[in-house]
Length: 121
Image 1 (cartoon, rainbow, N blue to C red):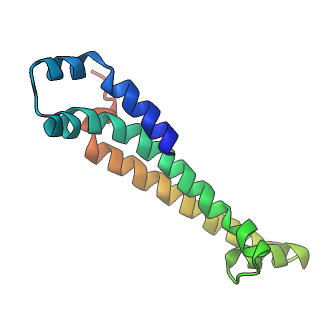
Image 2 (image 1 turned 30 degrees about the vertical axis):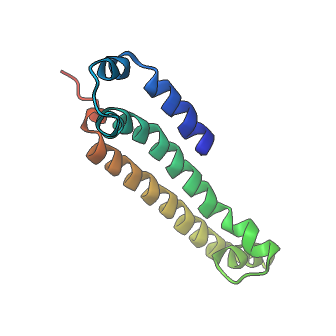
């Protein structure tokens, strides 16, 4: 994540409007907060939401390796005992969590950067 944010920051800070603002001697704090940050937030939040969804799905593996009680351990034991309705219900819960996170990220992106709504004229 830090590599992605760094690469995106270098890309944004190399754009023409940032160079123009620097040449007009805009204070660095205002330059970064007003001009660079909104363009950095979009890609960082999108990738962060995807990573967070992957972390939720990865709990199944972690709970089984470390023998922690939780939904991950329940889903594995339900598959081993052929209790498919329970495993399907847990998969639906995990899928709903990932969809909720994706929706939350999309709503936050629209709130933070209204230009990302892509309206047709």
